[in-house]
Length: 141
Image (cartoon, rainbow, N blue to C red):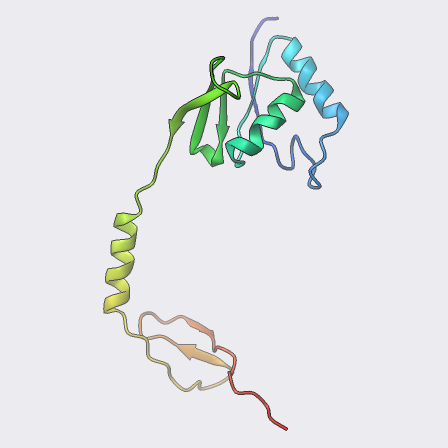
């Protein structure tokens, strides 16, 4: 083998069909690539608990596994219960975004105008038009 490749596979729609089935030809192809000396890993949006069984089914034990759309990176750890421990956990502090939204919503005022044609409503902030909400009145007999 001249070059060793790192092959990162997604799970849903790639390793697994849309119905959740993993075909034997997929398992065999991954095994051939692994046996040829290439590093095969998973990079998925799935949680850790939903990813580890896929590794087992594919017969791979990569050094790293990326889960939760990149928010969690696992590292192989023979002392860990499932064989992997958390190597990196990406966190997001929404404080700045929430403060901005709260400030904007506190200062925003929405004015509903009578539609001039069609079923639209205009908002004071900007010139965009949206469909008016459906009437809440109910027909009575």
